[in-house]
Image (cartoon, rainbow, N blue to C red; front, top):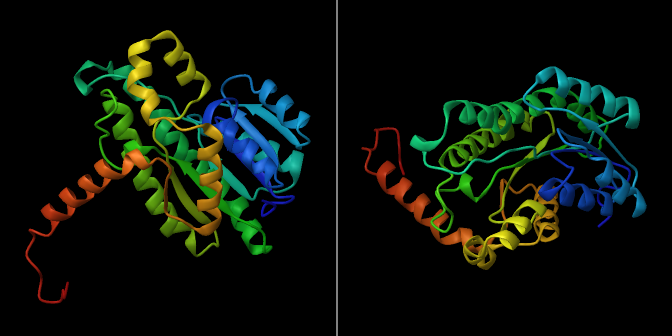
Length: 269
């Protein structure tokens, strides 16, 4: 539980939800925490400090690269290093592709995909420095079970699903590109999580409750699995057993189609 003692963890989207759970888990493992969020994170920081953690926060929008660079500067000024980045900020939208307004879709991709790229790009040099000093150096990209296929137990969230597929690609390329720099990269792929927003939805809508509650996990459970997987070097940290069936079916369908390709002469499998 002390594997990150005195490390510095940055958590984007850390004011509430999965991000706050990740911040709490990082602090419980000994890290000092910098939260970044487009919303007010003062309450989150106060709760962390009340539990004995060293924590601060900065209001930023990760879709703006200049603001992400300010986050790197503020973190270095406050803590002097960066060892772990929880690349968690994201937004959602419900609806089929044909029903979502293009402007709303653009905003979602700006945050969920471009924003995640901004964080990887801006923090990679600082994580490289940490690795060179012999310290921990990790990026945790928050994807979703939507990164693994199209969940049948979830209403259509097609633009969101597409963005989380993109995050899987970003994660895979980051693992390749940053490996030789000593930076470990993992994808967190939870299903429904009982965040503040989801709890409010369940309380207000019995139909939503019936759809969500059988599949939902507690944020603390997801955060603990996230850090266990990250520190072990797991590529995809899927946390919810309900994701297994449809994700495996998707993988089998994909491989079945790919295996229909003819073998080339220099291929042996």
